[in-house]
Length: 563
Image 1 (tube, rainbow, N blue to C red):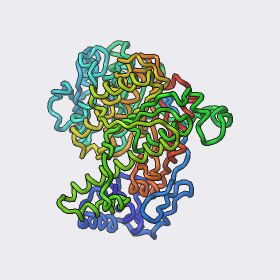
Image 2: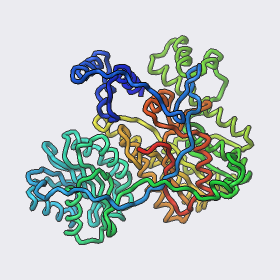
Image 3: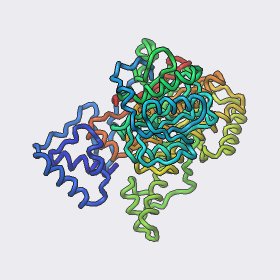
Image 4: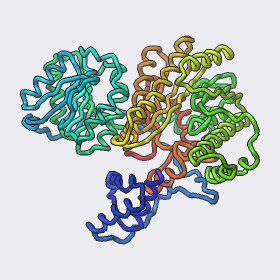
């Protein structure tokens, strides 16, 4: 993030332009030495005349002010509500079948449809290397990868493709192929979890590769499925997800949608959330569990609940809560820079260890601040330190909360980790870590609710717009949040309980809480003119969604900037 900020400033000051394409700055951002940056800039300056530096103005509503002390004041705005909606794909040019002649295509998957795809490709003059995810065969010189494990009749159809398939996809992408296509039965279930988010990100990071997930009707005859899949290889356009399970060829668009007149004007006093909490059925006796709720954006929703309903709040997070007063020398350091300096003065630790200690201290402070603030707002609050990936411990804790109170009225799940890197630099183990933390943790809390036969008024998963649009450097995070939506939708259908995934745009940091972005990233967003969600507005938006939104809805997007 810091290198991106530096690169953007350097390019702006020299009057160069990346013309809105972040990929043009990729090499400069990745440069780790001044010499590498100078070489990149020299080549650009040699190739084009230098234009006068452009004024770096930011729209007033998105401007980030940095007051003394280095903290960022609340720069956010109210988010816009969008619904993921299937719409017909605009007519796109289609390449002739002869375009496949001479191409070498790696096809994984078994079954009648996979056999028909391989046969049709060969008839069009392509060389087909058939294999499986575990044994795909040689990848050198491959012009494309076609994943067919998620088709009806495939013996691999019940196992999730991700995170395991990422390593193979990364290997093929290293050769800059013409095609990366996955095909899936519309009823394939967990097999396809995360593929939409992953393909949307592949399309962003590899614009010269036709990257697509084709969702088909698995009840169609194998030869018809094969024709549809090959047609997707030949189809133009930039739709990373295409649904062909109905009569029309469709894709997803994020369509603005209001909550209706009651939410806009008849919900009660503006900004307090009391009417919304009552509409949801929350009062002082209600119990809401927030996983990942003591820090970041979830703490703001906890505040909204506390202020509007004064309910009982059970916070679960990985951060240990401080057990004793801080060393006065450290307590006087109020930000990361001064805290690192104070730790360094104590001696005996390497820089990396100092950084880890500083982050842990700041995280503990934020937990303490959240618990204190919720109590001041009238809530009964407890904090539990727990890694939600520990399935048995999660099950015991949820059961204990339910046993003590006799109820769980709502559960918000916002756990996750971020390890952003471009696909080319992303280690498969890192991809799996990000993916499994989000997905396995969510499944653990849902399983815990199932074992209690607990019927909460709502379950909310905190997702990300990275899943709905794709995002450079966040293939794992986009896939994980897309999978989160799928898991929640299936659970809602099976259990009859309300489960909503909210894909958030970036929240602004404010008042001792980190939001979704750091101070550095806030400045980078501001430089690019990207607005952030005001934390209070975001929290009240979720209360409004739970109060006035369609209970059958399983996914919604709240963001401020279209991608």
